[in-house]
Length: 467
RNA sequence: GGCGGAGUAGCCAAGUGGUAAGGCAAUGGUUUGCAAAACCGUCAUUCGAGGGUUCGAUUCCCUCCUCCGCCUCCA
Image (cartoon, rainbow, N blue to C red):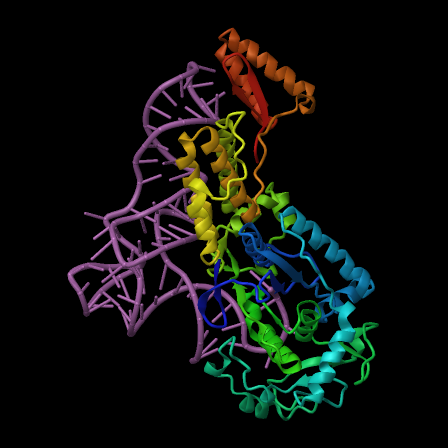
């Protein structure tokens, strides 16, 4: 497949460096609260990338970290009166539950930052030894940006107006200032009172790792000095990923990531999500409004990953209808397969080839979704083996997109309250007696109680009204 | 201010130098006692505005307008 690369700004074919397994790293969540759907846009698209590779026959090694030590986790764990470990374990569990609901494949490796502090310290020592880092008086260690000429390539820093020297002078009056240059970033943070019990010993005194370094150290541990792809939200391009490149290339000497995959932000009602605007949604918030995680997933893949996606609550309702339509189309297609037709493992995509091509062309998920519907239309007059092959293609595509279609709603009569059943039966009798007025009154009563009645030729069905 | 991105029907949203996918909503019809459901249709002479290049631009170039993101630890 072809995918846009942030660093070279071109679309490039994805091929495993080692010729067999595509190894990639995704910056994971900071576990200090529930992830919101903006976070999940990134994780869902990374999941689709992986699924597309795997559906296309490429083996993958997916590493995604858990950031469980930083300012926010420390601050909020203290506020909650919990140890950092217990606090982050709780939110990690919640994150996993959300991922599961969204149909995200668990990464093959999910390292935690606190469990890799020795590796981080080792990397810092190497950076110091090679002249790329220096310790300050307060026990912190900084990366010396001036020592790495390649700094800023990913985010095109050199084309920006950021004048490090000037800014430094403006702030040089501050006594607390420990860095040589304002642009230098921290690798190790010396212990401070507000850190509470959260500090670790190091050659530079007690303290804790800097955020950027965590990822570099874990990547090195599991993917080595050169690997296939690195991914995250666009906001991580600078400084996070820029700093990772600097640290890793200086310490390890490898190429680091061969490809950079960044996912654009999710907007809500045309603007940025924020707590103060009250438009920051979690899966739980949306579940409370009657929406499923799969509907959320459908919305999140409904726009191209490089464009901002404008999320609205209405789009979730549209997703529900769209998923139902796909499910119905699949059922109708399945119904046209004869009992002797077993070509369910077709290698091609049949009417869904265009959808598959879209996915392989810069991960065009909305194009692929469109192709699902047009494919179903094209498949409408296929029968037997051809229908079986088409359904196989449809299902492979579903798997690549990570969508699970809703099953046909069959109301279990045991779950219908007796009073509702009686009401429905009374209405049916009134209807048979052609007592329309009575029948309509009874139906409106059922509606009030949240039930929809559908009349058939010889019988009727009851369904809970969709919210 | 610098850098990056976006403006396509009521909403969400693809795409292309050759004449606008798809979904939702809406709406017409068939069906139904009426509905619902189902099925069959309809639904952008036009792609933020104005210029330019071209036989031809929504697609390339320029200008303008609007919106969004990043600019030191936000996916």
